[in-house]
Image 1: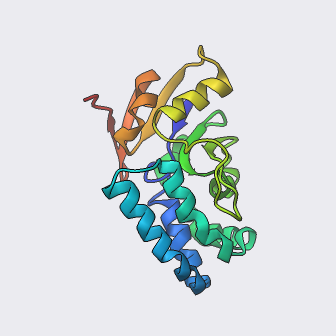
Image 2 (image 1 turned 45 degrees about the vertical axis):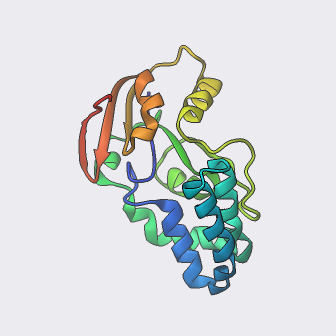
Length: 188
């Protein structure tokens, strides 16, 4: 089985940032969330307080100002082309996507791309509240083993970030993706 990160790996860009900007254009009142988001950024990245999950819950408050189901359909109708060609050419029915992005955000592109197994952050699409932890770093490995068991082999793993080293370490082969260039993972 092959495992892939989503953003900047098989998708050109960051789907969460793209969706946020798309929603901001459609629902300008989202701007009211900027002060709390700015404080959350400062608190997490500068003061090093709180968890990534707590930070993201504040960020996802913008969802309260959206028509999420309609916005998702509209967003993906114009962004699905950002799934990279190299991935489309090697896609297999057994592929697994493991991403820190919200599950609700990635369901549509995964369905449209024939990806049957998606593991991502469980975020309420209306409130922005998480169920569990952000699917990031070692949490990705924990969820993978929880779903597939500790004996399941990852044949190939692809990501754009060394934050995914925990998954890269358990794969037979791991690859770093930069735009459309794929190179062997260089463990640090």
